[in-house]
Each structure stands twice: as C-alpha cells, then as structure tokens.
Image 1 (cartoon, rainbow, N blue to C red):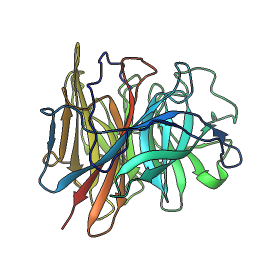
Image 2 (image 1 turned 135 degrees about the vertical axis):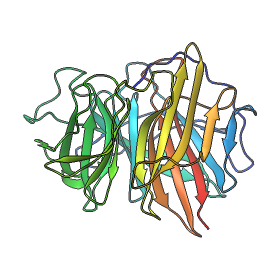
Image 3 (image 1 turned 135 degrees about the horizontal axis):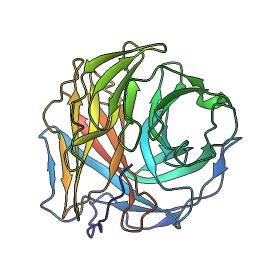
Image 4 (image 1 turned 90 degrees about the vertical axis):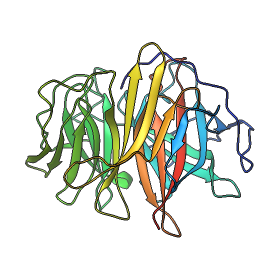
Length: 321
C-alpha cells in the first residue's frame, strides 16, 4: 500500500472496446456480499508513456468506481481461480469477480462482484486496520488460499475458497520489517511459496521455515525506486511474473512487469506504464494460461480510497512462442 497523489490522464479506447459504463447486478455465492460498482472500459491513454516488448500485446482494461468509504477500495493483490479473479484489500477483505470480454477476447467488463471479510486468528473480525492490512495472496494447487499481511507481518492459511476457515493457520514468515513495505508479494513455488518484500529480499517458504533466495539489502530499497508489489507463477514455465511500482513525488508514478527466475533474478522489462499514459498504483498480478502459447496477465491497482487515484484492472497477453 502506498498513498499517491496523481490525476489519471484522459483515456481512449481500442476498436473492440465499448465506452459504456454499467452498474453491476446483485448476486453472490453463499456467505458473500454482492457489491455494486460502476465499471468503465479504458485503454492505455495518451501516447508516450507505454512501452511493451515485441511479444506483448495490450488486451483491454476496466476502471472500477465506488463511493468513498465503500469496501471496494484498496485492492492489493490478484490471483485467478478458474474463471474468476480474487483479490485482497487493505481493509482485510476478499473480493471476487468474473472478467468479461469483447468480441476480440479483450477485457471489457466485470460481473459477479462480491466480498467476504477475512477473519483474525481467533475467528473474529480484525479490530484494527493495521491488523487486517492484507497485501498479498497465493493459491496453492489444492485451491487453498494463503494471505500475507503487511503492517504486522503474517502468512495465514485460510483453506479453500469454497470452505474458508474461520480460524486461519499461521505459517512461517521470513524476517521482514513490520510496517508499510513488508510482505508485498507471494506466489506458488516448488517448495510451497515464494515471498518478496517491498523493501527488498526474496524467500522460498515451506509451512514451517523460510529459505533466503535473495538477501534483503542492508538499507531498504528507496521509496522512490522500483519495488516489487505483486507476483504470480508463470503457468508455462519455472519462473514468476512480477509487477513493480515506482513513485516520485509529486506525480511521477510508474509500473512495470518483468519475470523472476528460480534464483530470484529479474529479467528484461515486458511492460512499462508511465504518465501521460494510463498508470496508477499497481500492486497485484495474476497469470493465466491462454490458447496458442499465450499467457494472459492481469494487473490491479490500489486506489487507497483516494479520489486522486483509481482502481484499474488491465490485461496484457504475452506470446510465448
């Protein structure tokens, strides 16, 4: 989570997209509360601030809008489960949604938007915002959810989405600093989980212990430098996709997507977003295997319930072969 002061640029749309705004209908699975939101299709905005590698294509985007104080704010990580996308929030909620597509297969809408609060270790609600500041999310092969918390570093196992446990199971946590730059990114790994701290450092964690992959720097990464804010396993390989954020006051805000290998090394840039084009405080990424050797990447931004920021969901296709 990082509160930023910026105004988004004007947006233009691709040939397959629709600019119509809509309000999502009610309806949610048992135990979940339906959410209402305005969903508007967006593009990459004004030219000049977007760079994509040769094998990457923009695949659509939407903006989700809700009144200030609503629970649909502070989306901080993103993973795919079946045909749905799942995210956690700064307020300790799970939010699920189903992406909709235009005739070209590009992201053009959202449906079935619903919310369910996470619970604390005693099975009750979080009593403070710091206690419920969920920043990262992983989905294990059996569908079990693991949530990472930032202000008070914890990794908690909540069980499968269809049968969430009221009392989460604590897992081993790497030695990250408490505060606003802790357990920012977690994803499935061969050993169990791969974990990255926003301030630097990468670990592979089993339920009972974590092994250092990349040592955290003696001095935390600067606030105005590139920092990892989200990560997901590459469905077609042995590595991970990561989203990074850079913010320099007052309005220089950027995001980029790269790969991470087994040794924790980051590869070349795949996507770079900056002003005057569409950009925001991107903190989550989900990777989904697609047809014809493509991988669909979704990234989501955390608006911090700040009117100068936006909740954006953008899609990119990586052509693997």
